[in-house]
Length: 326
Image 1 (spheres, rainbow, N blue to C red):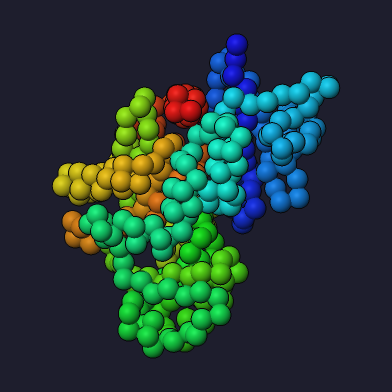
Image 2 (cartoon, helix red, strand yellow; image 1 turned 90 degrees about the vertical axis):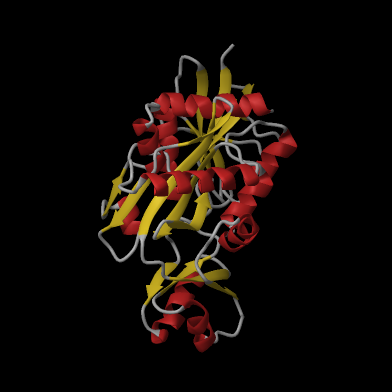
């Protein structure tokens, strides 16, 4: 009997439109001969199953079920395609764990940790994984501009601590620009991380559980036409994403080992995509995404293609791994 798979998409953050695209690609390419697929849209105001005729059926949050023509449908597995909250910060993972429904992303603790840039980098630091000099602010804190510049230098990046797709991020060149950048970051989160600028080659490294083993995908080099890899660069074609990256064999091996080490140290499951900047041969970690973009143009699917793995294979593996782990 075919398994019922709920593909959750949408979410509560500014990333919901990107998530809807990722979820629709998962629905398009996952083998419907092997699975019964259901597109579930998760928003603050409603959780609904949306069929191919755009009809909506409410989700019963007590047991994550739907009812169609007086028939109750439950799910054997959830494919998580939500970027940001509540799919990438541990909330949905905790919910499904309580209901004992397997899901394709990492567990709740790992999701919450990796979604918090400050905490992630702090946890990985004792394992020798380097990051840029940083300064932390919480909403309401006194903003000491001189202290910030002394710690991280200029230019620097002001980032919302818990946000993705480059929402709430600005590059600051002058001390006079800090206040506006901080105000912008607070629109996305009540915590901020301010990082020193690292002038080097930026790469993205996909790691996942594939047929039970930790697999590192071919590495992608990111060359932004804009000042940095911002939202427009990511989603409006204002960047080159070159796979495999134009880096040395030594650099490739080093960053692959570090990305795999981070994945294993954190006891990750499912997909991850980590961003690094090389200073010489030394990679510095920026962040780790545990629900990366899954459209045809997204980085992880590009890497899978270079590795000889099709989207149907990629998505089926995620479901199979989730079912096996439960």
